[in-house]
Length: 292
Image (cartoon, rainbow, N blue to C red; front, side):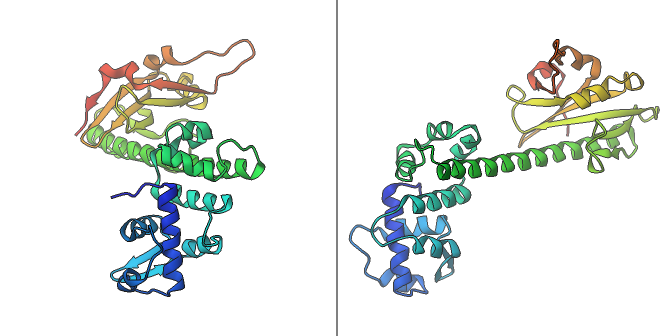
């Protein structure tokens, strides 16, 4: 069960690992026998310290981790400095991944509004809410970059899953092995080269879009390069967008032609050029069908 961060829990856990370190405890039994300062809950402190990886537990063995030692070097045994709070919060976010962490790239206030009262108090103690000091801004920027990287990695993973499903789908549909261009280059303007049918080996180009969201909430990003490739004269009638809805219990696919996509693509203004178009899956909700 997750132990949520609070000023009280952090204070207890710091004193707890400080005692473990000073008493040179190497086993849980030794840790349980030391006299802890008044008010420290052994079970809660142990759970939070382990959860945040300040300590390492292996069977009955206990030890202070590298991050735990770093934290202890910053702890004076009484109060928690803003610098130490920031180290603690960075580790908490990295290891525990609270839901509000995904809001960080949108700004600190966006994340703060989704925190519970105790989490907000911890951030206030760290001086991270209202200050515009360079160190504070750099702290938030570093976390925002980490969260953006995570999201990109997750999107790439889902994208690859959709491409793999398309490879299997096309082979089953046509009886021929398609060409997975996306693993060789992302500059082609499409992901997979397949053929019209089992009887017709005319080449078709497939751009794959994938989402783990529901059809009502999912959307695809169509790039200008993809659309320009789709609308080339020699690609007319043979370029398809495959929209995959990948949920835990089902796989849904909509096969969309460039002509069907056209009404949803923006046009350039007098001096402005569009770059990416956000297309809701719901625009083609009637086209989705389950794929086994």
